[in-house]
Each structure stands twice: as structure tokens, then as C-alpha cells.
Length: 68
Image (cartoon, rainbow, N blue to C red; front, side, top):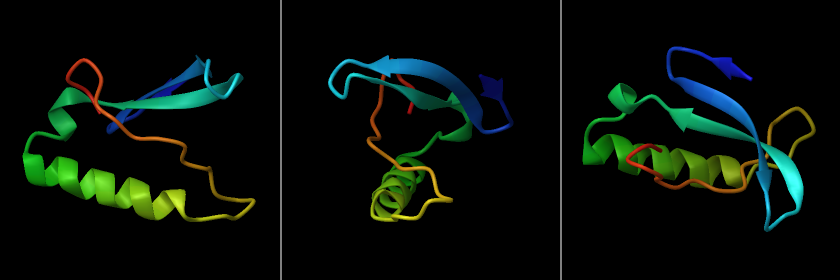
């Protein structure tokens, strides 16, 4: 769907939720240290608590194939 300086966004299908979702994969060079990964996970947890019609909902964050 798109690509920026921080990552790539794909349209994907979540078989658990049975719906299409936006999947953002960060570029490998953007997150290089464990402290960067920890900060990203903290930010994702904080955003997952936000409920507002103008804010995209976060349903998960994980590592896959060495990418976040």
C-alpha cells in the first residue's frame, strides 16, 4: 500500500480476526538496538489503549523474520 522512511505498509488478511488489516513492517535499518525495540513495544502498548475515531487501532506488535 505504501512505503516511507520508517517502514512499508501492506494490506493483509488476519485469519484470527477474519478481516483485512494494515500491516506495517519497519525497515531493518530503522530499529537496530534492543533499547529501540523496547521503546517501540512500549509505544505500541500505549497506542493500543487509545480509542478515538481519528486514530488507527493497534491490534498487535511482534517480530517476524527479523523485522518488527
